[in-house]
Image (tube, rainbow, N blue to C red; front, side):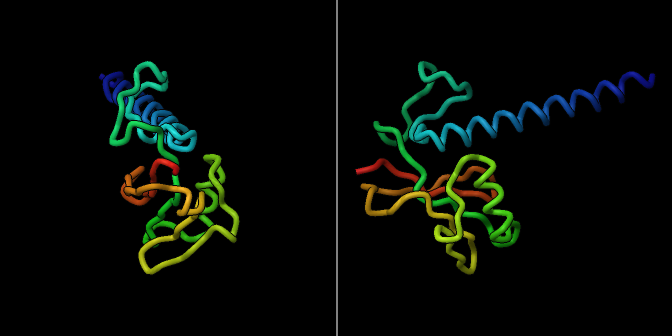
Length: 126
């Protein structure tokens, strides 16, 4: 009788860890310029073309001011291989913005959501 709750508990841990790895893979794909593609797996042959025909890059990371301080946003960006220096940070009323590239290098932009509190401005480079 006690085995059922323990099994559910451990299954929950396994699912939480697996979804964390999935999100890390999504962030890595975005950082590597594969943002224009959508896939559950990481293999390029399984990726479907997204909104643009060419891969996209992250121009700016947006962190909700309700959940992220500038130091926490920098920590998040650093842990995932994004730029995070003070010269790249801009603080607005709603967001902590960490610029990844000069906007003049892009043709067009759109905003995607990594999580409800973390977004990215992306686009294909000129």
